[in-house]
Image (cartoon, rainbow, N blue to C red; front, side, top):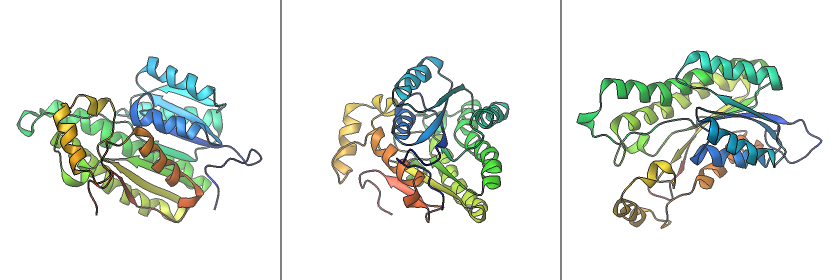
Length: 256
């Protein structure tokens, strides 16, 4: 089985796409991957933050492509894949991280808010995976890692029902993709973060955070790097016989 992440400079460099890479978990994943033997395609809609991450990645000598793209638009998804193939000729790893979070109560969610969230969190993940898989099938190799959420398993608590539903969709989609991709040597897995220290959680009241910590067996809020480490594992050759897996990174808040 082909190596995906390696530290041997004599081995062919891999190519990784990370969406939502300008901040939070996506930034941590991008920086973690940049330490490995992989060229990076970083995708986000925030040019300023994307360029900032790009500067940090360049210090680690990864060859880099920065793309401003909205994954809720299929035309932008096609642009991501087209530009990646034009520059690097292949795609080895795709991390579907881009997403938005809502905190509205169930009765307050509007049709337009529901549609926008689903288009980014679920539609974007599906169509980017679909487009990337077309190339991975020709290569007969590849790794796709989707970022879902604990909310996709237990429903929304401090997040909206629309967000929880979209992440439940990502979990189910991961399994469908894995079944379709398996015969071509492609692994598709999912990481489900619990309460992670990001911009999304920084807006929560301190009381809510402390209550979470009381219920987390490991006694702390997770870091973006905790999630990035799980992604690195699933992207590595050590996970070559794992597909369709939903990997919890939640400090034991949910054990299933």
